[in-house]
Image 1 (cartoon, rainbow, N blue to C red):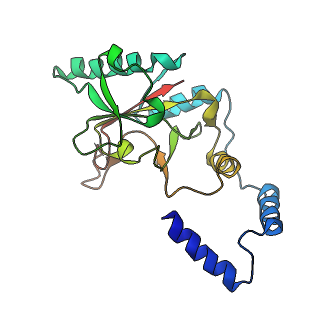
Image 2 (tube, one colour):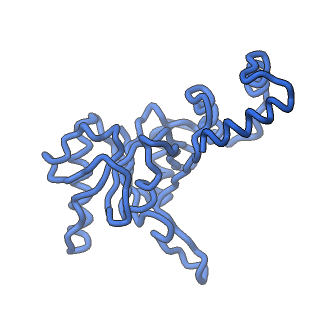
Length: 220
């Protein structure tokens, strides 16, 4: 996908008589973006972490704080055990995680977690997030080899780890962060606001229609 995009943009630059990378044009574009006035925005008052957690709960996610990264497996295990107790049925203690979480001691927490993309047979996935939006309780997840999108779409249960310092006020701040930290946009920018849902049939909300039935957020 990236190669095809580069080829297309290369042909556009060639037709315009421009070099592969015009530093002056790039600097002018960045200056324009920096100086361009944003439209009206609601004021996000108070602590961004608390606001994100409140809005995520409004979106029917469950949320808890985690003080240390090493606590993540135990918190995931406790959450999964709670699902089993609530339904009086055995809940899956096996699943997948992103590579960035592969070094955690999942086995000690009684979980069998593999660092690979999810398939249709996986019921649990543990992922990170690029950042999160306090205004809407939304997680921003970028596609990539190390951040497979299948893991946020296929399993019934999605547990996401969001670092508190990566919680921004609004959508505009997300794209400002992308411009600062990434040389190019990824193939997809996924905005996750709670479990998947639809109201297409008789305007009745149904969870899990196009993705996870439940989303649990660990704010690290």
